[in-house]
Image (tube, rainbow, N blue to C red; front, top):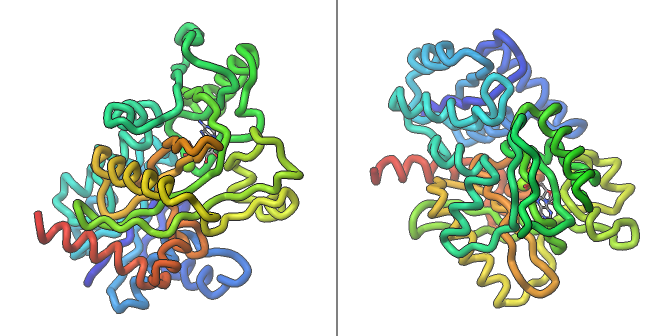
Length: 345
Ligand SMILES: Nc1ncnc2c1ncn2[C@@H]1O[C@H](COP(=O)(O)OP(=O)(O)O)[C@@H](O)[C@H]1O
Ligand SMILES: [Mg+2]
């Protein structure tokens, strides 16, 4: 197939040949440093015999439309996580693909928008009986109020970011003054509303799904584990450092592993919740859910990632590998899901 890999990039003005060179460089140096996700995907697609075009998006939708018109791909592999460096505008790329009639992998604009908004998605999930933490949202300039039903400790996050941007130990706040400070920090640093959620103490589980409709596969669960001697309970969260800084992870005893044993009833509940979430958020082809399992066995839904990180050696690719799909087969499977979905439509 002719596949255009569409991704957000910081390299201004780069066309396919420049990305091709960069990709070759990064793939050759894989053992020292992971290549960008889009290059890993392109490499896998090429390995599978596809004709691959690299199309980086920055802030010019016209360029995207024009370039896709020239390439005329059979399928777009959409791994754009932002537009104009703004993750909240991620849906625009899918919107454009939709408008131009391209077939593409992954979720439609609606699900990208709703699942990225940590408040809106929780409302939809709660309607369907999924347990989500209580929360309040704070838009810049609005009067600061704390709903009576909300109980400290709270965790304050940017409403529409991902990859743990803006999440540190200081995000967990114990009183109104600290809440106000952290909300202000989110407004100033991230230029978007803040969400303050009730803090759920518990295990941190990641659930990857591939498929559509009734043919939805739940991959083996992964888990972020913390050294209990080196952390207090409210420090056992996926902060930016905990997720991305290898040295910090080693020092703090933080690892991502296949989930430690779970009671069968818990497993079944997680399975049912994640399938429901996939359906009611109108997700497509693949997604990764973040849930927390409290000591009393209660499963709390944190968020659905409609456009999850799928680099080699990270949670979703590891889960796929455990399910018998090596990285190339995993990426091919996402293509197959999109193609079959389009054929059914
Ligand atoms: N309500 C919560 N209770 C406990 N921990 C939370 C809560 N919300 C977020 N966290 C912690 O912060 C991490 C990042 O939050 P998440 O909502 O998944 O944002 P992101 O989109 O950046 O991944 C979670 O993986 C979890 O460790
Ligand atoms: Mg998350």
